[in-house]
Length: 339
Image (cartoon, rainbow, N blue to C red; front, side, top):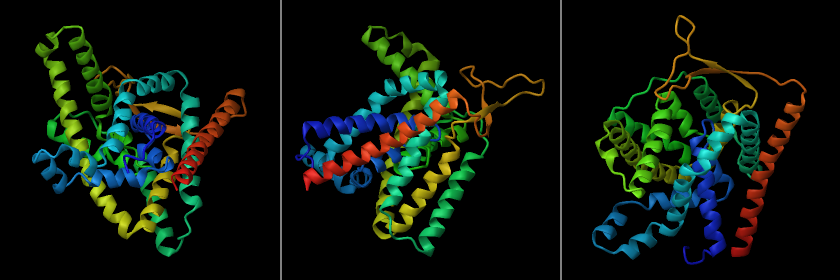
């Protein structure tokens, strides 16, 4: 499987990793949708579930080449390389765009999710009572999650480990936003902003020859938090992949219908036209998080007025749909060439 990958395939795989990493960091958007739409979701799950007892035996016995081939190492390595690069580059750009062009960014995401729903459901022919019920339940769960209230920040390492396990669902379950789950758990800023920035600053210090950060208790604590969160994420990835691989093998149609429901339910999270409601104290002052940012309590969604800004936003929705259709076209073309 690995030897047949051309240089072009490898570059596109890194790009897909970039897209997954960026999507995983945006509340309401699922990196799993990128994998689904780009046509490598099942290979992604299959590769992760190869991290098992046999793989660890190969690793312990020093059979590194066999271990690498067994877990589909080139695929996983290139994909995760893209994700890591994304967290320190694409996601930074995404943060800037959301702050300065929020309406257009969410419009593009909304269009991409609409395109994802079309892509996943267009060839699905197994509609019956069970799959329709699964679709309804998936949609209901997705909508219900969007109306939950966020908790407060908690840097207890055991809780951080659990956050890692739970948040990684966004990579394995299309439509299930791991970053939004972190918001609900109260640790989005801590785990995807503060700790990532601490790692970035530490790497910068190391390359400049400055090691004073090892004496900074706040920085060291953030690095510990990020390490435990990463360990929890890896644990969750491997665990979920085994469960999903079994479910996809034995209940594929019901699972796909449920995933479509998750994605439909997530549309409310990324509806472009919404007014942000912030948490306030009894005196009307804003409640701030650890970075001094205002904490979001809820969103009031509304239908837009026919203005120039609205028409531009609709154009971005169309662009989002076209991006997904373009990925679909590329995936089909690649499969035809390999066949």
